[in-house]
Length: 489
Image (tube, rainbow, N blue to C red):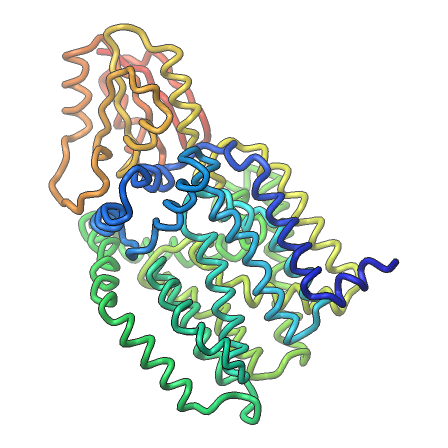
């Protein structure tokens, strides 16, 4: 029996196969990695009722009302462990391959689309979306689904037309960046041949209905969008340096991370000291560039559709003029990349297997790390290390940004005194200045013989500022972004 032909001749079988592979890889070691501070923020909300969850999350984070309800649903079904919070994102991330494949199959063919779906299923980038108790695995599924449904609706499917507004509303109430998918989905109308697409009046009607239903939440979106701008303003950053960093470091990093994800370090001088990082950068940077050039220079797809794909791959990067998104925010880039993968696999027989092998190999180092790949803070390891060595008349000071206290509490036994500078109540939108690091350390050392400083590199102060003027008893890096320092007078 020719299994390959059987799969490529049966869309349901192909979709089930790709989903099953993706689901297996996301369930594998799903609870092995420590929560990082954003996941800890979500974990702190899981014990509340849905109404309080919405109220608290809106007050303390720049996220829409539905942002954490899917995670709440996950904990109701599977518990509040790391794995329990991550299962619904895992299912969503694995399912995202299905609408992506179906969209590609209609424009190219199912055989080529399967390769794109498989590479999404096994890529560490997509696997990590499904192993994070956060929003982006769910956003990727709803985003790909919206584009697929829009393509069907504009081509005359009445059933698909009914789902345009509901999916768009759910996505926008889940994450503001979903607006990229909404804009792309409506723009897709103009790529459908005139004789095949629905009348423009139906497009206008759907657009008006969506705008009216979403308008009550638009004010909330604008208010929350100012959170980061206020932080930058308070920090008095040099915007010239900010833009230089974003365009020379962040954009190239997003581009090369579309398959390997956070396993690749940010572009910069540090990567030149690691031969493996240089090799990975060359492989995936040159590979992605080659795939996209092959896609856009060939006439495999209609010219209007290629222009649409080109805009999908370029316009999202303009966000860096106002924000500093990560590759996780920009899963929409996977639509042109998916078409590029399919185009290459259809042109060269070995392209699909080679790309799949390259993505799968990167899973080995991904599963081998104990912390979130984009931010290597092992809170589980830090809590275990400190509590094993804690003695009488000592204290713990957590330095981990807005949610550091929550991350510590999630893993701590709760039997040791601790303070969390700036991380006690992340669910309150307050600009009241907190205590300085110096005064907090001095106060604790007046009460205790020594302090364990648990410092997350992200959201925490510099080590030199922490230890200045104190005796360092011990200092250890638990993970690349997590340091524990034991100090006394």
